[in-house]
Amino acid sequence: MAEKPEDLNLPNSVIARIIKEALPEGVIISKESRSAISKAASVFVLYCTSCANNYALQQKRKTLKDVDVLAALEEMEFENFVPQLKQFLEAFKLEQKGKKTALEKRRKAKESSVNTPELTSDVEKADAAGIGAEMGDLDELLVMDTDDGANNKFEPINSN
Amino acid sequence: MDVKSSKPPVATGLPMSRVKIIMKSSPDVDHISPDALFAMTKATELFVAHLSNETFKNNDKKGIEYCELANVVNNDDIFGFLQEVIPHKITVREYWKLIGKVDEDDDSEKSSSESE
Image 1 (cartoon, rainbow over the protein chains, first blue to last red):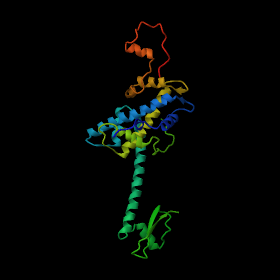
Image 2 (image 1 turned 60 degrees about the horizontal axis):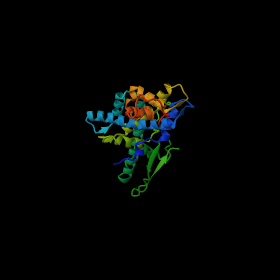
Image 3 (image 1 turned 30 degrees about the vertical axis):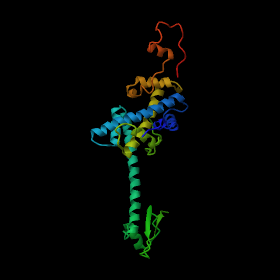
Image 4 (image 1 turned 90 degrees about the vertical axis):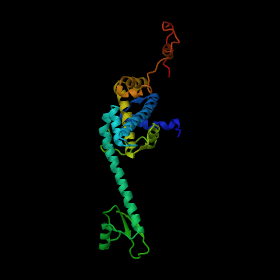
């Protein structure tokens, strides 16, 4: 797959912003410097990827993992990046987990609409209490219309 | 490098899609996990900030010029992999001397302004 030259470059606007945020106010960066730093960033990715890949291959893995990237940074003597990166990764993984859980929830709810309804304990409680739609303490709730067994109807209810 | 907010930002400034393209251009790279891609993107941002900072620290001026960047890259071992990317600039005359086109004793002409 041939890559166009610009595909290996990172967007100048973002690079400029990162440089600006890293330096005190009022510091001027020449266009040439900005361009050079952008190229350096691309080369950094290439070099870091190469080191990380070597590490993964050593572990007999074909998939690059975050530990490979962290190991590569240590090898490149950028170990001072590692603690902050670990924090970022933790937050990232939590967010991904949250997204996954939400997706699974929806999927299960969808499945239960096709098969015999397997109500969650919360929904059962709601039915038992005859509450129905007023479950303000739950983020999302799927309520079955149990009047007509053949006509399964459900609607998501957001907490108020 | 200062993180502006106390909460670690999960969003990346650099587009992960672009970083992935660069990573994939490396030979023998098969699959990249989302965590690895995120880590690489964030690391690159930290790198850009670090390089900018190092250049600024070493020069007590109000701005960053290319020559200062080249100085940092060529003096600090940690940036060794960038020496061919951000080399020192030389004049055309110096280049000719290097390739032996001009007699080294012939310094009657002043060197021209810095080549770009």
